[in-house]
Image (cartoon, rainbow, N blue to C red; front, side, top):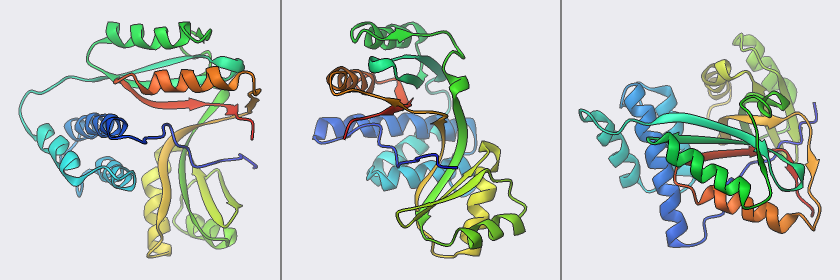
Length: 240
């Protein structure tokens, strides 16, 4: 299908302060997933998957455990999901997913990122229709046929299996994420998943010029500095 899928990195965390930001974001996500389900990774597949992702991003165990323990307590914070869409520098399309306990604060901060970089915040749905929401599983391998056969034998509805640079990537509807992951690990024990997530993949890419690149990077940086921003999706193809 030629999705040109690359392992996404929403931010580059180089300093202790930036790592703290990463830990804070994971702490919030873990708390919400544990609070809305069962605060036990063994009994909550969504929580287990998020814990695995946090560990791959080198989030310390004590940060993970504290968030889950907090979700076991009574009361606590009340976070809601918020999604914003728009057009960033160079005309790239953006989807910004947030977790917030104050909608007015969050929209104000996100709008500020758009306004100060000459970007345009759009209406709900104005950008999302140009993306496909997909479950993505990526791992080292080259035999597409074996993976496809394993998915078919397990009655997993997949969209595609792609082979590129020694990596195999399974694309499936979001509802098939855990079924596909279970089937894969049962068929190929010991497989290490380098990517396992539900994400938005652009249907087409937008080339960003060298002139637009500094503002594009500023925009991404400003969004990542917002405490409530959890995930950023875009269709930008950056100059090499």
